[in-house]
Image 1 (tube, rainbow, N blue to C red):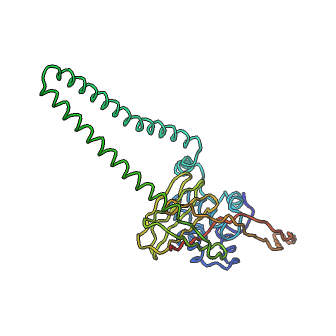
Image 2: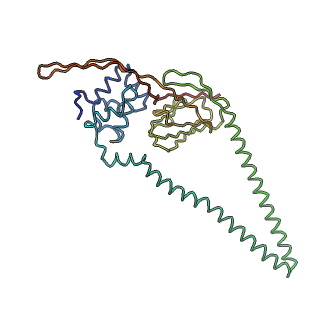
Image 3: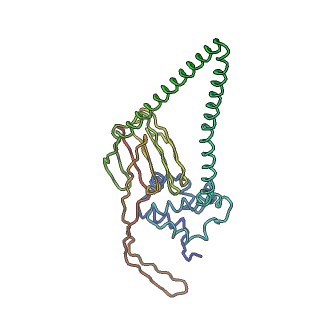
Length: 318
């Protein structure tokens, strides 16, 4: 059990104040609603959406204010909701590799069956056509009228084949045009300030579709023209698709776990920065007095380098 006199909420609040962050600043960076941040600082965990979000939000809060999220959760585990609740177990199972593997096998079998259905249908059609031709040929030897019917059927089949070929060529041209448009598009970095980066997308396609995929649980939000188009926590492997207005001139993405997140716009991969930021722990001295005796401990300053987790990215379309 933790020997700290402070609660986990007080520890986080002190770290936030030391960083010079307000609750509004923290809400903007983490995309965690302000009322949940207040509930965490006050220790009112029952006000959060569920037991799973208590630990997830605390970890994200801690990392944003420069603390080690995992270490803080272990240190104050006695103050947090149990990880054995059914709601927490269900959430964790969503990210369980064996669960995902089993689901993937089911999906693969379903996809395989779906791929085979058109093939089977095509074989049946071909067999039916061959039988029809054979019957028509047999009857042609008995009547010239039947022979003409066979000729008409052949013309009809040829016409259908020609239409199918034309349709396939049209679809191929559209796919080629879309591929060329995506290949012409490119990103160039305009500026980087702290965790905020601005890019320009040259030759942006008319249809601007943002696709976001994470390899680990991550909080994500998408905003365009001052309107929030999506915000929430994505689970590993899930793809979130957001369609922008055709007249959109920019889009802003807040990524809570940027190193594990991949983003494409109009099929073009956004080059998310993997830059690192330095976090320094200052020298501190703590003293406690309980039975009349005084003890002091001091720790020397140390410097560590950690990968930037939270990034704010703005893409301007040209």
